[in-house]
Image (cartoon, rainbow over all chains, first blue to last red; front, side, top):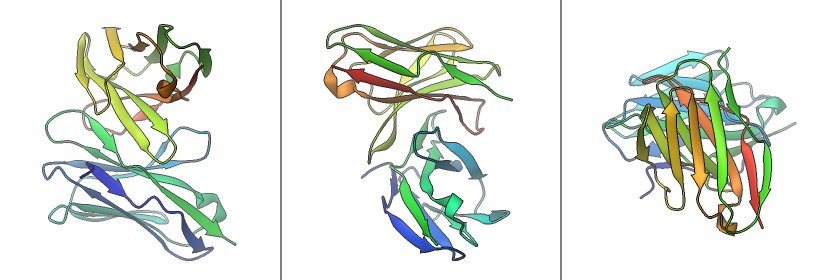
Length: 111
Length: 111
């Protein structure tokens, strides 16, 4: 089992709809969870982080964390063509400073 | 602004050569990381360092070594480059528990 798993996609969503991206992780003691966006040829950039169970909202983005199910998700409301990118889920393990990434989900917003 | 600088954006090396990838951060961060990114595989952790002269293996350390003699600098070393090490290499840094800040990446081609 991979430590951090994401559906690789591509996920195609019409403009203006909600895009839902999912991530599961294996280390039950993990405490910090991050969503990064990466455009082709660029480095990843942070969209959101979440530490506590529940929802965290920032503009059009909502991160959801369920530690019991070891599941974290990212919702993008009112999807825009500029949201087309690869979204990377990252988890900081409990035992150390190391941060592990999933393989990423490629999101495509169609006009 | 946090700045993580990778010394070389593009490198072409021959099989068997020794390769140094340098990374410098200017925010006095405790932790520094080296990842490689390949299509469909996301970011895979090679090594990370949580203090000067301290290092820990990530998920794919084979064929690599690292050096952290000063807090701001973290070097990745390929003792004898092989074609399967052709990849994009990303350096990142953070303080305990915070988000990762990435450099622009070093694209290495081994012929």
